[in-house]
Length: 371
Ligand SMILES: Cc1cc2nc3c(=O)[nH]c(=O)nc-3n(C[C@H](O)[C@H](O)[C@H](O)COP(=O)(O)OP(=O)(O)OC[C@H]3O[C@@H](n4cnc5c(N)ncnc54)[C@H](O)[C@@H]3O)c2cc1C
Image (tube, rainbow, N blue to C red; front, side):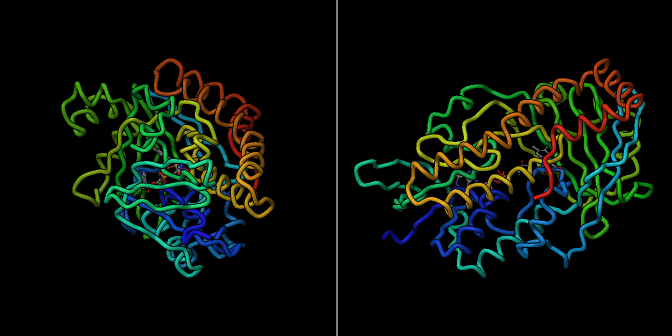
C-alpha cells in the first residue's frame, strides 16, 4: 500500500469536502493546495441551502461565524429597472476565507494530510503498476492509488493534461471586494446587470457584504484600470453606482481573476475524477457553484464507499455526475447569455416581473434539492 491512498489536487470546497468524507471512510488522503489557509478567493459567497443540511449533519457548518440567512432575490437590468422575488430554498452568506478554513480544520481533525503552498504540475497514470505519479513544483513525485482533480475552473495542470477547454481564451474576469454599507437588505442577494457583465451583492459574516462581479477582460483592457472600468461601465446601472458611492471598502485592492470559462468539461479525464469546477463550472449568476462543488465531492465519496477498483469508481461517479449536473450546467450556460446586454437583461427582468411561474422555474431548474 502507498503512503498516499488518495491524492486530491486543490483544496477548495470540492477538494476539502471530498478529503473530509474520504478520511471518515478510513482512507489515507493527501490534499495538495497551492495557497495556504486561510485565504480570500473570488466568489460571491452566497451558499445555496441545497447543502446546508449536509453541512450540519457532517459537522461542517460554521455556526460560530453566524452566517446570515438569505431568502430574497433582486434582479436589476442595465437601466436599473428591477424585480424582487422570494427565494424558495434560499441560502446563507459566508466568506470563503472563513468557510474553507473551517473545513480545512475539520479535515485535520480527521487525519487528512496537507501540502500547502505546493502546486501539482503533472499527473501520470502508470497502467501497468495501477498507480498515479503526482509531480509537484518542488520536483517531488508522489505515488497514489487514486487521484481526484479539485483544482478549480482553470489551472496550469489542465494544460499539462491537455484538456480541450484550455485551448480557448475566455472573455470573463472576476472581481471581489468586502464592504460595509448602510441601507442594504441583510437577507437579500441582488444581481445587478451592466453592459458587459453583472454584479452580485449579499451579506456575509461580521456584518460585512460581499460585492463581486463577473466582468469583461476587453473592457478592463480598454479602461486601463479596474476603477476606470467601474466608473465607465458598471456605474451606468444606478443600483451599482449607489452601492459603490455609499460603500466603505475593507481592502486596499480587490481580489481579481481572469480566464473564467464555462466551457463543457468531462468529469473523468486522464483516469482522474474531476470534482467541482474542474468537472464543469456553472455560471455565477445561478449562485450555486459552491453547492455543486460540495455535491460532486459527496458523489465521489459515495463512489469510493461502494466500489474498490478504479474503473468501477469512475463509472459510478460519471453516471451520477451526468444525472445531477449535465442539464444544470447546460441551462446555466443558456441563461448566462441573457445577462450583461442592455436589451436582453431588461427583457429578462420584465418577463420575470410579470411571471412568478417563470421566475420560480428559472431558479428551480438551475438549482438542486436539499441533500
Ligand atoms: C465571479 C464569481 C462569483 C461566484 N459566486 C458564487 C456564489 O455566490 N455562490 C456560489 O455557490 N458559487 C459562486 N461562484 C462559483 C464558486 O466559486 C465555485 O464554483 C467553487 O469555488 C468551486 O469550488 P472548487 O472546489 O471546484 O474550486 P475552487 O474553490 O476554485 O478551489 C480550487 C483550489 O485548487 C487550487 N489549485 C489550483 N490548481 C492547483 C494545482 N495545480 N496544484 C495545487 N492546487 C491547485 C486553488 O488554489 C484552489 O484553492 C462564483 C464564481 C465566480 C468566478
